[in-house]
Length: 152
Image (cartoon, rainbow, N blue to C red; front, side, top):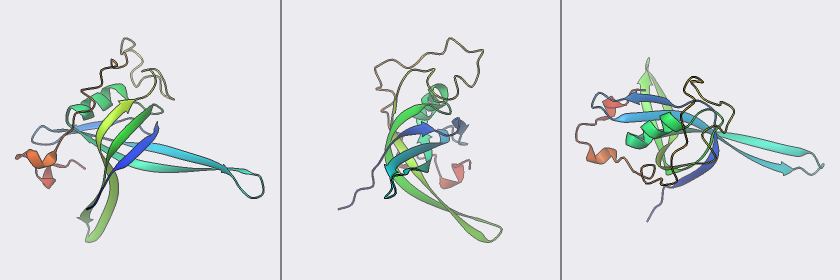
């Protein structure tokens, strides 16, 4: 038996970047910071921040792009995945969180960035019914999707 589950509650470090695969699947990428604080042996307060690469698919990706922005807090559940690609004969690796569930925390105007487009002031937070946000996108069921479709 094995389990690959990640739970992150943190703040976005970048605005979401939405792209579409050639088959039309939405994919959204952004980073999220989590921090922990403690007091060391000498009584000094310390803090450590970890950065996490997030990948969200389907309708949930489109909703993240619409409602999340840099500085906004959110809750994510997903799994770890490591990708490898070759460039100029060198192997490159990245580990990211393949997000399955997102819950927005706080209002739409919370965070360091009030809105990526200040002229769009009528944008509001999603309703309490987060059923659309709990939608999973399963790549294995998309027969049109290949690893060559990943736009990054």
